[in-house]
Amino acid sequence: MPELPEVETVRRGLEPAMSGQVIARARVNRPDLRWPFPPRMAERLTGQTVLRLRRRSKYILADLSSDETLLIHLGMSGRMLISGDPLGQFVHNHPAPEKHDHVVLDMANGARITFNDPRRFGAMDLMPTSGAEAHPLLSKLGPEPLGNSFDETYLVAALKGRNTPVKSALLDQRIVAGLGNIYVCEALFRAGISPMRRAGRIARTRVAILVPVIRVVLQDAIEAGGSSLRDFRQTDGELGYFQHRFDVYDRESQPCRRDGCTGTIRRVVQSGRSSFYCASCQR
DNA sequence: ATGGGGGCCTGCCGGC
DNA sequence: TGCCGGCAGGCCCCCA
Image (cartoon, rainbow, N blue to C red; front, side, top):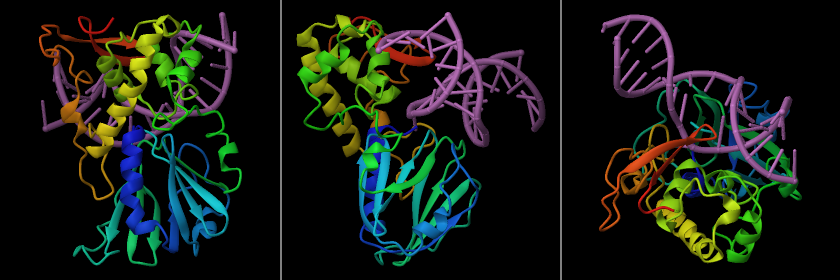
């Protein structure tokens, strides 16, 4: 579900409750999500201090005082909700447990972090902090789209010779890590590039436009607290609101929002996923 | 190597 | 009101 902006929103939401704080008790309510949890996960979490919370692509990484790192992926429907009174600013107590509450972390500061994931496409794992980037889920990821190494030169080279539609190429996490269906659609609209265009056949000048466009879309979405369509919630349960700013995603048959364009947003299916675009604006 | 499709799960929504 | 098919923001794996 959550793409880079949603994961970053969750990471930022977790920071005040978790960063620098001790996990007093970890409860693991089932043996697996998408994959089995690592052995003795609850014991390995209990008593550890969370040194810091990082994000890589759509993964949250919690570095622990045990020199292990907890990897968290929200899959399609995963939520990390905070309850309790970590900073003395909330009056409510922990809510009643809900179906699909799979992992619960009680922090020594009184905060409770609940991982809820109905579809169980999410994941958690533990690995040594040193060499975490070698984890099988992380080792093949491409550059961070908000990082310095993602630039025109890189993207031109990465798309070169690719016959696949640019839509599929930008969803490929080995090319750039963190984009999903929504933000690829939105970025291609802002760049005026058709999702069906072959990745290797985009003029360099247009790839040069695409790079900053991707960055700005993601930054705009982070500032808006992500997009909430069906499942996504921030750590306080609030909705993000970037969905109100979509130009094309989920806007089939609605008018194009670009000034002066009289086109209509269309939906096509590309490798099993919906693409939304304006055929007048995007070539 | 590259590209496309299936499958994993549950929940929700629209149509009948 | 109830049932059923279709669909969903991700990602791994297999096949051609």
